[in-house]
Image (cartoon, rainbow, N blue to C red; front, side, top):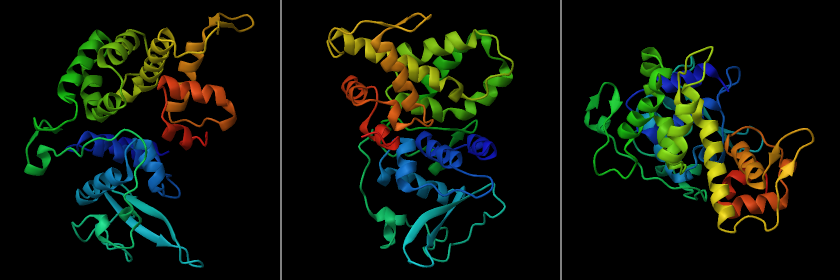
Length: 309
């Protein structure tokens, strides 16, 4: 992970939320010493979109001059290796075509190259989202923010962010508010992940902004882990009340600690899996895996990313 790369991604304006989310995950996979070489499957899993949608957003990023892709072949086997992504802030970045695929020299999308892997329109079994057409393509922006047409099927991010800013109250300074509005794509990611604005997002923002902090909040992602945990707990409790939990399971008591109910343990495990951090496959039993899937707390794609089958 490169903080310079992710900070650069956050500062980019005029992108559709899903496209900016793909850029952020791409930058999150950047290594300051070696570069950026994530696989198609990894990026699609990170962004929770299909590979076909992923490449649509990558095309938009390349056409906007923010990234450049370079296909690579193994010198010995001549088999295709993972694509090298050059990011706009890197010294090596230049708007010129790579020697193999010609990326960067034509507005044609990647599937027009017959040998490109992105011609394979397989999809991840995760949430699908429409490709959002923004007013940026028509040259219309407002205060650097993207105007989304009324025909778009995506969430109303302006209204959602206004509610989030209102929930911050006096716990967020004007300087922090100005900085955090550059990360609106995170709110779109919350809503696309199924987090409820009223039940999951706003209560966490109200609670966390009321607490004293040593440094100001600069991005909406500051709240992401707590929101995921609250959502997972709420869904687990709902599933348990409907009989989806395991029958006869009582709360467990850790030695010297408070009682922890099965739904709390399941919610914490789901939050850990959905946080994107490393989870060893041995940390999840088959029984827990089945219970997580039944309760809808995680997707099969998320489990596969952690090599849990």
